[in-house]
Image (cartoon, rainbow, N blue to C red; front, side):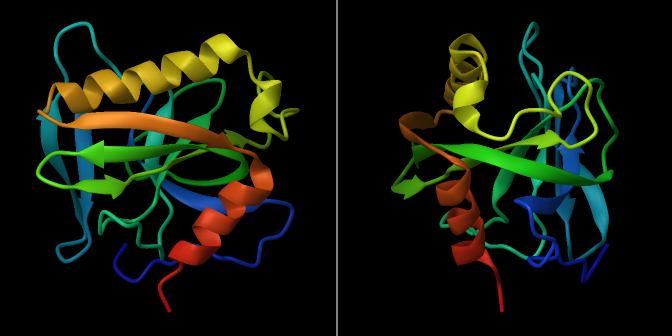
Length: 170
């Protein structure tokens, strides 16, 4: 997957993403671009698992130095390394603190052909309980690593697409 870049010209709020950790998985995988492999970064504590497929938008670089993070809501989990075209519906804007504080927003997207989520076009169409559960997952996930994840707001589709656009690596 070395050199893979997501297209920023798909239109209709669509982006391409690569899944690192599928829904229901306790393992956190990370793409190692230099070696073109996925490495096991850590296992989540017993009882914790990724609520939806989690990965990144290739060709981007967020403030934390990694590609921009994306959580993809769909009917069933995919697999590590799966390339998914998905529709951005918003973002959870957040700061992450360990030794220093950086923005580490999470893009929220849906698989366009999902029978459960495919009709959703804006974050506000999701149940508030689902959004809170996603935020709680990231808070707990980071806490287990000795980090603080602080949601500072939510963004709609247009603002989330701007976050991605601003993160494109030339």
